[in-house]
Image 1: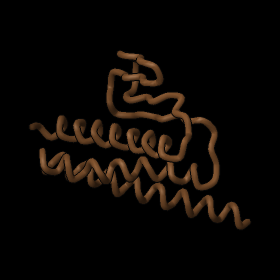
Image 2: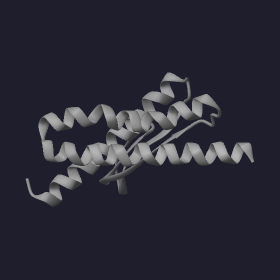
Image 3: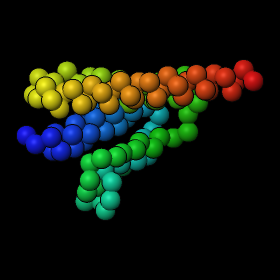
Image 4: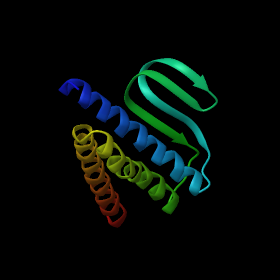
Amino acid sequence: MPFTITVLVAIALAVLSHELGHTCAAWLVGARVRRFRYGWGPILVRLGVLEWRLLPIAGAVETERVDGWREFVIALGGVFGQWIAWPLVEILSPMVGAWVWVLSVLGTVRLIVLLLIMGKEKTS
């Protein structure tokens, strides 16, 4: 598989698993999912809350307003989803798996930084 296609497949899988992680976490804490958007660009398919778009390089999950521990669990769900996807993808393609792993690490670091910033703002 050419390098460019490998990277795009890794991003698509990382984004999908990340958004599915948010969605599952929202369901676990009882938050209603208002929209699950996978991809960027024009909408190809719209079914209920699902929007499947042309380029699978971005995504978003919109839930009802939550706060406190529920908000934290939903945020954590995205990173958790990527960590679950990584070994499965690694089995299919070590090169794609390596890229999903890198994206999982970056997502984890981003979440930790955001939590630290939020903690500082609450103590100020």
